[in-house]
Length: 359
Image (tube, rainbow, N blue to C red; front, side, top):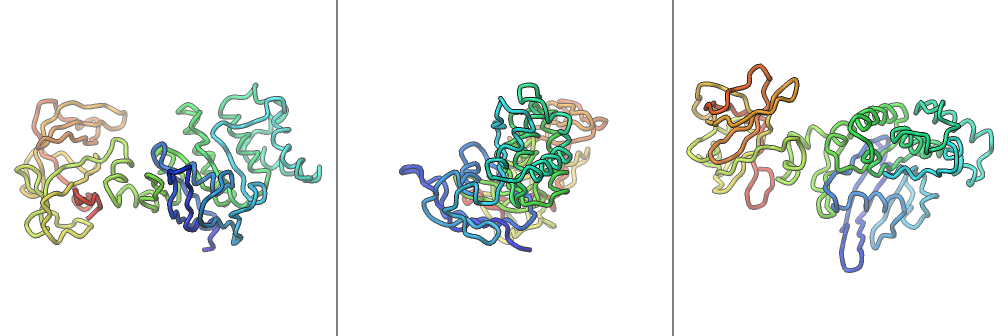
């Protein structure tokens, strides 16, 4: 596969503060990469560096095999979609879509052809003669995407494009963006703080913290094999259950309070004892049993449940820890009862408490 966008040793300082330090990222041709992380982690800053909206201090940005580090944004072969839509209120949708092409000196016939294609792909044909003030938020965002689309570029950059929309519209446009990528097969780099968007849209997710990429991997790998405690805690709703304990018996068991769980079948490297370790378990990786199985189950006191439609989230207390367990609604245990939770250890994560890295 060919590299579409390459960020090489990129450093960006704001005054005395280093926001991005020696950042490296390779995005493959036609790939959908999502930059995910909390506010202030540097994801939008990195996107703006790729776009040429910020001047970097060190490093290089390459697009389609060309060093564009000092090129103007208009010369980088990118289309950008912002959170705020940034539409011209006095122009019609047609005018907003065609304005950039007119400025670039594109022929009238070519403009009409590109506008018609974008309108057909985004299903905004009936809106072409309306002004932005007469459009809903979702329609405005489609127009903003269309304005990038008409540029006929190889790389699209999205800066939290759905965050101004309500939940239903976000869900609908998420599907539209996935369809758009499947149809166009263009390279797309997408910034969000919403993990659902990241998990549903991305070919690979780059999870960022403090200007550093913590993990770059496909969604299922990030979810099932987080490289450290930060990634484990950031991905998943509700978050991963964390049990403080120790790896014992020469790396063969995990001890939490007075209970031992066998680590046989764990997908990692626990071949030595560790006095301080953390066992991470997703809510769906704990199964309710009513009888104990030594080395396989942990006892838990049922506190309350949250019905969520098809399933229920049951909150329990276990060895001083709060646990959430996802169960079918019809199998909800009664509050105040003690159950035994079978641990699917092959789906678990064990972390070193000091380094916070996955073992």
